[in-house]
Length: 298
Ligand code: RIB
Image 1 (cartoon, helix red, strand yellow):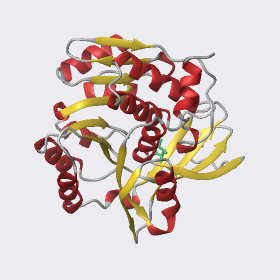
Image 2: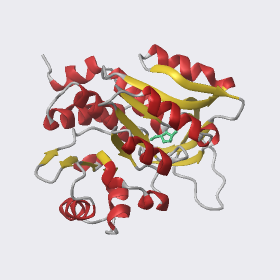
Image 3: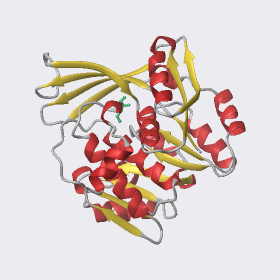
């Protein structure tokens, strides 16, 4: 089983001609509210890929439909607490080129306490995985107790912040980073060639298997003794929001099935490529059948 202690957000989407500039007032030409949050998106992608995932989260009572929707997708939601606090939410602008800008309010995602972490470490079984992102509070304590409990930690340090640099990232069994996160972790320029970023990641975390996602430039897997590259599937992006989350959920579901690294990368890349051709975060995540059909057309 994979346990995902992760954010659940309400995503407020605004379609805009361009991302709003400082001091500018801009009218949007589309508005929509949907399920989001890196944590919830990753759990949903994993469940839609056929993986077994238990989500640990906190959600405002008034938004309980999100928990029901996650349960309908096959996620174990017994550890999603409904609380008398506002849910986390995101204000998302998406422009006509599919580029986005996101403003986050953490809300209930920042209400985790030691009690939650203790409950988690009593609930998990030996060999379980714990997936984390950087949208919930308490990561240092969680890293500590998960490592002591012998869990396999998968970590996606998004959205990146300086506090991530203080975490014992060498405790991760798998790290997922994009270009910006890799640059932040290594101190290299974001414009560095992928080879340079991979070498920097290996210097910084020599024993931590890492997946580097580079959008249209493809994705890499790197460990101390192997490297694999997966080119991106060429598609026209409508909205890239949640593409990284789709990739991670699919990758982890394939890993849970015992698939090879190359198969995990391929499945995850295809799922993300389908997702970016649709608007929304959670709403854009494809089902496994569709992903397989694209990979193996009749
Ligand atoms: O990765 C996309 C997600 O980031 C959105 O769903 C939004 O809620 C933010 O957490």
